[in-house]
Image 1 (cartoon, rainbow, N blue to C red):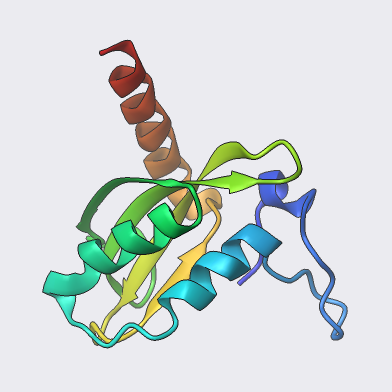
Image 2: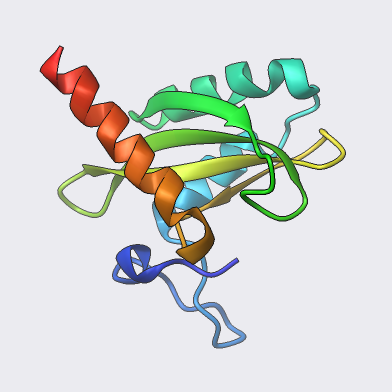
Length: 126
């Protein structure tokens, strides 16, 4: 999993020389590592993990081909960097419904990220 350009500024370099997950995404992924639920417990697990990091759960929806090997996608905002500005990331429930991985937005999910940003904008206006 490679971070996108927006996450690359805070990325750590792994021993293999490839960029690793930014610290915030790594924390989120670690907090979801013990997921032993199923599709119905996905949203609750992701909501809890986001809250533990001081982030926000925005929504979850069926993957519908938006990402490889995944059944559901949840959009979250988590603090990133020194200033703690909230950035959109995705938690993805794998095709078997047994594990969750975390990804920064990339080329395949850029439209979903724009939707998440618009969703946040609407909520802030309300």
